[in-house]
Image 1 (cartoon, one colour):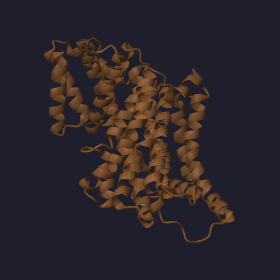
Image 2 (cartoon, helix red, strand yellow):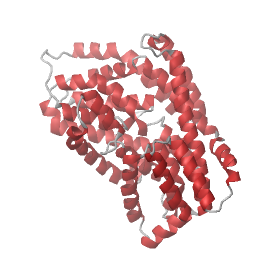
Image 3 (tube, helix red, strand yellow):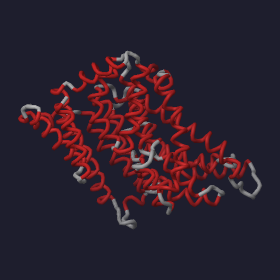
Image 4 (cartoon, one colour):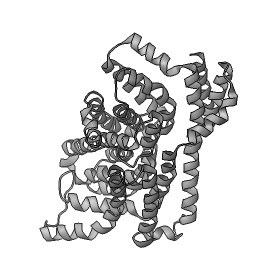
Length: 433
């Protein structure tokens, strides 16, 4: 276990020096291997082996397709459509934030981008509707991660590859957790803030409602069609996740050319070429992380980290329930300080075998792990979504602490249900098995 201690110390030290995470991981792993007397000549093979996986090709494809769809005004189309459907329901503006964030996050694949895109448009709407600025900013920040749990999900792909499980099954399990969070947020908003929302003064008519929904549906449905194509293709056995990524890129170009032509112009300073470069840099960063995490995984394997942790936990308790309680506490803490993909790649090789030793289905464990890490992204003090919400709202972090903790509290029952009622996230998986 000495190698593991050295790795964690080196990784934390390098990260504190602001060394990029992939290089911090790789350097810490090599130092640990040398300290543990391991042969570092295996490092190039570990790097190549980590990247030599066909499903990983889906990652740059989904990143590119998400960027293509995001540039052309999709966030405004989705927000307007959801707002039109909800109409005059009390709490409709807050519910619009939650649902639009879930839909946009599914397409963009980024919780930070979701908070920025939806928040910049919906914050003024919420203020006009009578919402408190602090609560509005907290709701926008808290809703940002929901779409990451719903397929197509890049963290889901990374977890599936780490656990050697089907990507489609992991996506289904996390989707159930994401939908539960979405529903809980809407209920919370309706109970505590729905009655404070100012309702439109003009009279309601069925004809006007239908015209409003009908006029805003075409552009929004074009956006929603992309994840639906992926969903049907993957779960219908027509496409692999990698092929679905390629189809998503093609669809992104088609939608951008026909429906969202702004992406092929450069009015915003970010035309197609700039967008392609951005997607390539994002993909390269994730690939570097996967490559160097492969070195860390090899070091963990040589050091027997997974087996040692399994033996330790079995010595502490023989109860899967207690083990999962400990894991939940650890993962939320990790999620507060570390990015989701990094956490999966570093902790997955250690925790997944331990979970299996307790008889926990790795697909079920994937839903637990991803939900925990995403909750960490909205939990102070180091919460990426909160930083973006603070910038949009013009508030300081301390102003958002009280309202954001309300949403963290909303997530806890969902986490407990996900953890201790496996059927809540596994029923869809069992339908396709």
